[in-house]
Image (cartoon, rainbow, N blue to C red; front, side, top):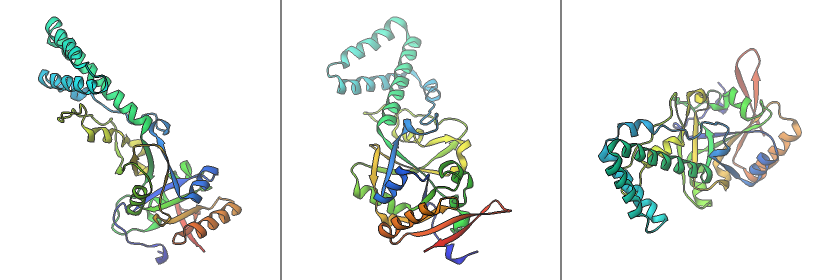
Length: 294
């Protein structure tokens, strides 16, 4: 083990961003900015998929009445004067068509509300998808996500791109300091089934907030090897971060030398405290070898 590349760090001390070498990525590197995408622009077509049928199917009539009353109140805040009309419609449905038909309409209303809520969040909120490390007692670069060969292949153009390694705490802190809005980070949960939305007990909400964020941070277990950790914000677009948050940068061995020199120049000028490594494949083994660059 090369002692120069061995560091102790707590779990999730580092977050990684694999990048292709192109105009956008090199401009962001030079300007110390990161792009927060809309959920609709992510490459997984099942982003923000959720299950609400399970909780609705188990809800009794009293729970459904409570939630439809809250719906009327929330709707009235958007369209004043509508509460009596909505309440009258549901009371009329209950009285004329019976409890089962009322339950059907109430479930449809809540389901439509949940779909609209998630669609609005997917269109307006921003997400930065990062990669983190599988837990280890002692952090070793060669055993970390730096050595995640599928990630290099899929997101860094087969070792023709580069990998940014951030101090998570410093990155989140600088995003909050240098940009407006909120920023929150959480790990992606992997499963074979979508997360279940929960009905809220709060007076001003129908869907429980934490279950919404769980839906925005869940993926099929096919993507388990990415060990993804997401930073969410309330507006998509470019966000500034402190150059000190970028602790290490790794350059794939297939990147042309003129591009390597360009990155080294940017790091020297913008990130004087950032270490640079070249990532080489160890032929004969499914492993990498690191070369520290000056």
